[in-house]
Image (cartoon, rainbow, N blue to C red; front, side):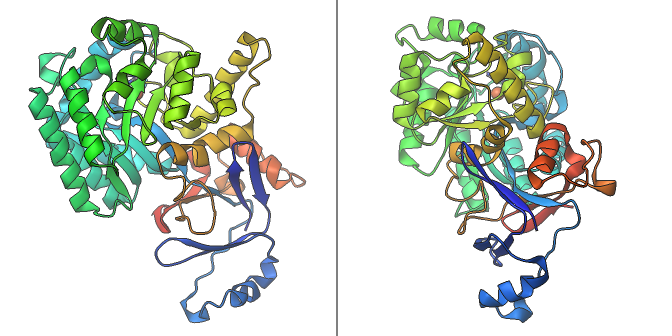
Length: 444
Ligand code: GUN
Ligand code: FE
């Protein structure tokens, strides 16, 4: 059937008659780009599969296949607070809305219930890979990792480290406790999925404000001893946050210097937001190979910056960029919404830069939501598009009849490209008919 995926930041491939072969381990073994639908059997024969072992899936009328979406930044314990406290500055919002809410994950039963709904909700929205911040709690974080594995979602799951500047009821009891719980979670996630095929632990210092220097140092040590573990934190999100960071760590001229000093910046670092970046910081981020989780919805609604990252400049410099829903920071956990908001934010940037930073195209935000996000999460050679050898993480999009939902109606002479554009700009979860992770159907 029809298939669309990104080849690079600027190039998508639109294939009206593609045939994709996926083996029993969920790996893509071949991609034939121009197959007459009446002759799919013959095309398969040429691939030398024993016919009795092959199942053929034909897409229905109006359906096409795209890679699964990657959410590079998202807070699982904020699932039940999405949309609250919009317009607040970041530290006020954390104190008033977020910390009391995240503290509830002390209760394992509450955690199981909300996380189950969260993982299910993200899968329904086509997010086949998520990089999750957990709460500070070990048990709840383990539950989240287990649920991702059970539900079949590819995920990075991190116990959140916080030892200061948070209420006593919601912070790690001590630096030692914070690091010990982290090690426990790392071991637990490894025991669940030893090869890290689907679920991995991600080191998650919330941000420098909530971490004593000893925690940052300890996490840097863990990172050095465990080169397989990704790292995530919030980075230059908003004025209020940056000012507080400077006051707590006056010895560092920038957040880049700060996190680099503690061994937390490198190719496996996922830096959320990066709204305010000096030339120097962009150079460091590029040189160290860090990825950016661009969260245009929360940047416009929570934080107080009301300014989203300079994505065009990042792309120009070859900095890895993906999209984050950052839910519950913003009001939406839909990556389609994040794609649209990324476009809106980029148009504002185009005006502010007097036309120098061109707004993002549909193709570019699609790239950010798929291949770009995969690269940010260190999974660029594994997922993100339909390259042979990658895992089959995919969404069947439906656009006609009962599958149309409220997206712009598809007309008879629409090209596949036009249908794709209508879906990206006006579709929603009603159009996501089936979702696969590693070849396994996880929704629909
Ligand atoms: N900075 C530290 N914690 C958070 C959070 O939960 N959300 C956002 N948007 N920024 C943060
Ligand atoms: Fe966040």
